[in-house]
Image (cartoon, rainbow, N blue to C red):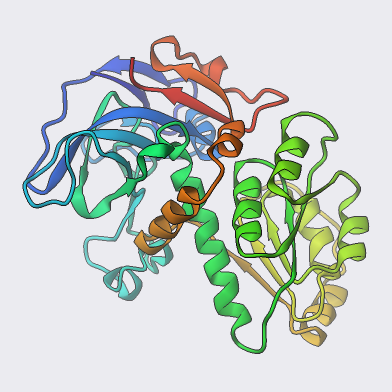
Length: 351
């Protein structure tokens, strides 16, 4: 079989190689890869800035945004040949911390978790892959073109869950949400906000192209003004920050509404300095009972919530997020480099 591999922390080492077909262990599914979503984490690994190979190996099979069809399932597993599935990314640490032992491995306390295609376990970027039955998530057959969005949707499903939990410390009936960034995470966060009945606003820099159109077709409101201007005007109850841009984070926090929640989902690169009035920000957070929190990864509960959310989505809208499909056989590093109108690039793993 062919697989997309890299030597972690070695730039320009990504290539498609031939590997032996995997043999499923007891309790595992054998899955034919259908599609693989590419994201910023994959690009960082390809650039040599991140990633760890499996123990004893020097190459890592990339890919954590998976979609496949079951080729073989153990008897009594609840899966059958032809079922559409995705695989969970993170696994608990071998000697579980308190969170991992309770199924909350997305909030592992000791950092000894592993992640498919990222940290010490091969990913889903192959024509065939295996996955433990308990970490396989079934998808509705109507999602065969867009099911690769499950993993990023699980990330925002967790973010919304965490927002609800924090808001529940007092009376909390949010009506208005602002999402900063109209990439895949931002648009999927907006989708879940609309599904929750909120008035959703999305802020991004571009004024034309697929992003504004996708926001408006969702029934949300698109903005391309400055961050301070939009946040001051709206004073939203909830902000989901999906750019990871330090300047955006800086501009959002002081202007959130009273008892507001800012959920950071974008990872900021280091090396960027800003002049910050810490006293002003601290005063606003304290006097308004504001919360600023981070959210990353997802557990099984979030994957199931994401699968339900995608079942309810307009598939035609979701397909608009997959702006480029690149066959694995035609892979090149250049094919994964972001283009101006890209939202999500997908590798097609099958014929």
